[in-house]
Image (tube, rainbow, N blue to C red; front, side, top):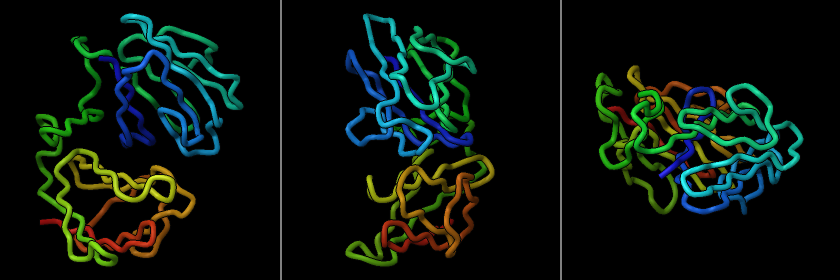
Amino acid sequence: MPKMIVSIDGVVIKEVQLTKDRTTLGRRPYNDIVIDNLAVSGEHAVLQMSGAEVFLEDLNSTNGTYVNGKAIKKQQLGNGDTVEIGKYKIKFIHDGSPDSYEKTMVINTAQGASPGDAETVGPAAIRVMSGAAAGREVPLVKVVTTIGKPGVAVAAITKRPHGYVVALVEGVNKPTVNGQPLGNDPVQLHNGDLIELAGTQMQFVQK
C-alpha cells in the first residue's frame, strides 16, 4: 500500500497510508494530511490513486508543489519521489519496492526502532508533571512519539543514534524546553529537561 512520510529538517513527523482514491493535503484541519504551516495553502494539493498509480495535483496553491525539486501541476509519483511543500518534505513510498526509503526515515511502530537504528541510545520516557495524568510515565519505545493536543500544540520526539530530539509539529502556542520556545529546528533532549506543551508540564527522563 502506498504511503507518504512527512518530515521537516530531517525529523519524521507523520506517516500516512494512502487508502482512499482521493487524499487531500493542506493547512485546514479537514484535510486528510494536515500540515499546519503558513507556507502551506488551506487546500494545497490532492493525491489521486488509480489502481497502482498515484497522481499528485497542485490545487493552485500560493507557494506551489514541488516533486524532486521541480514545480508541478499534476504528476504521477514513483517510489522514492520527494514532494516539497514549504520546508516540509514528503517522501512517497510504494510498499514492496526493493529500494525502500532511507534508514533514517524508517518508522516501525510495532517493533520500535528499525534494525541498526538508534542502537546506541538507551531507553527513555516522558514523565507527566502536571494535570490529571501527573506522575504517569510514557516510555519512548517508537522511533517517533508525538505528544500534545492536535489543533492546540503537537510536538514529535524522535529517537536518533546520538540521542533524542524534540521538534514542533503544529500549533500556535509553541512548546517550550526548559522555558525556551521550540523554533523550526529540532532540539536535543537531555535527562531531566522540562517540556511544557498545551499547558502540561512533562520531564524527559533517560534511563
